[in-house]
Image (cartoon, rainbow, N blue to C red; front, side, top):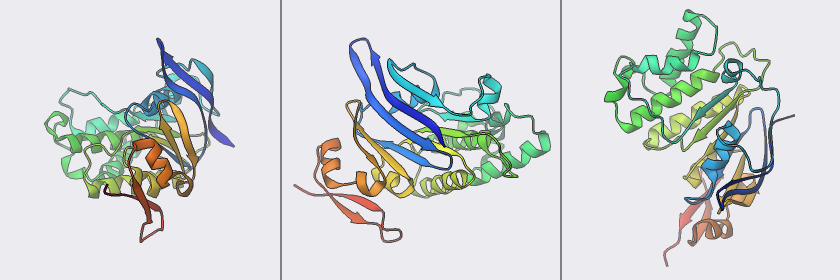
Length: 260
């Protein structure tokens, strides 16, 4: 059963169409990445799914999600492009905010917080003040927070969970990008559905079950990475010549720029 259905959704602001007749489906345990150039409508579509903006046309359905804010916060976690937090909380306190919707007890929450700190390689930062961190460190703290919001240790979950990420690899170095992808894989293995916006096409190709390619609010291509990550699609999206090769470890498509 589909957890999320987006059916011919459009988003218009004044006379400008940000999202134009986009459709997608997402099941539990799937990861879908949205790629495309700046201004393609990727973040607007994600905000629409998050409920931050209403679709002008079309229909969006979340199946099995609670109506109440607290209950829904146990099922839906969102990381926007910019996470504005200017209070000098300790890192562990910021991650603990992800556990606020739950009633799982301090000891259980403490285990989850410690686990998510380790997942994002920030255990050594847990007593640091958030406002003193670098951009990449702050991003990892915010990622740990939203992972903690949906994490379940015993695996016994009878409700759907959805994680929405807008450019989660921003400011992350290569090693921490890989840590993030490993953490996301573990979430999907435990039934969490993930919808995220990525600028890095090669990362999207490696970690996604499905990719939606957008430009000027439209769907250019959608499907598994092997069908979307092609030289013609990259030319359409980014107006640049590329060659597609295969990654040596998993044969996923890789985009290589072509000179001239």
